[in-house]
Length: 138
Ligand SMILES: [Fe+2]
Image 1: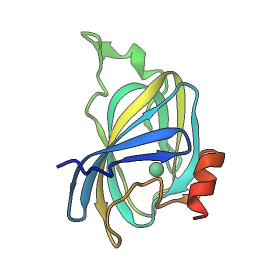
Image 2: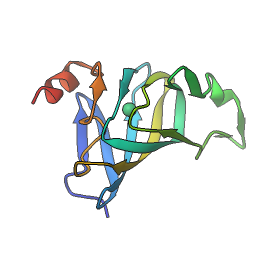
Image 3: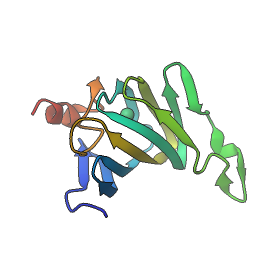
Image 4: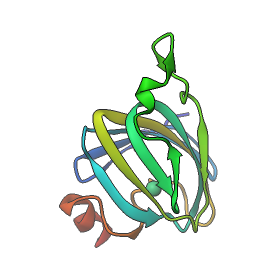
């Protein structure tokens, strides 16, 4: 079931909780073109990030989990990376560079200590933007 409080923002970047039950949650994230999400980690959350649409470089540690320019690698108009999941553990540093097409992915989460809210709130690292920085200081 999707919670009524499931729409959250990191500055101007939305996250939508499509499902939440106990310690588990699924959030949908959409990023505008050319967004950069600095290297960070979510110490309280174990996640699998699933490619939906767009063109982006998602790096976990020093590894590019979704390769550059993968939109060129498609069959029947769908990237062959559609539905591919990338495990991101609570201590895994990761970053995101979004290109011209924007980015959309699902984040399947297991919250290890707190009640689920948003991975944007469980953040260790440089914030995405000024609005996000203000939220993290609350
Ligand atoms: Fe993250």
